[in-house]
Amino acid sequence: QVQLVESGGGLVQSGGSLRLSCVAPETIFSTYIIMGWDRQAPGKQRELVATVSINGDTKYADSVKGRFTISRDNANNTMYLQMNGLKPEDTAVYYCHAGLPYRIPEYWGQGTQVTVSS
Image (cartoon, rainbow, N blue to C red; front, side, top):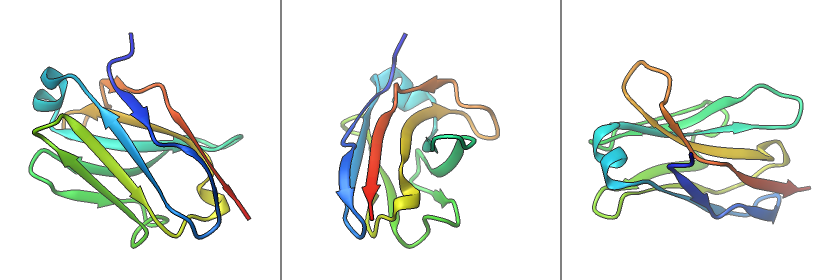
């Protein structure tokens, strides 16, 4: 049962930008204080991209620092991932998730495809 809904993926040229959105039910958004994005490229393991706490504290994978910005709008139960300076190696399916600190996320979205052409 899908609880989180992502949108905003697509095809973009190298150096371009995309903004992903993730909408969650209010009960999930307010209860699960850590939200984030993972991605999985073909033939590779899923990797954590970024997380944001309910207080706005953020963490990023080294590969996206300085290019991606994660944020959340608590009033509208929406989380965002602004992706700038996209590279072909950013091509992956991006999944949003919600959970508690130091635990495996409990809720996941269905994924949205991001493709960066060279």
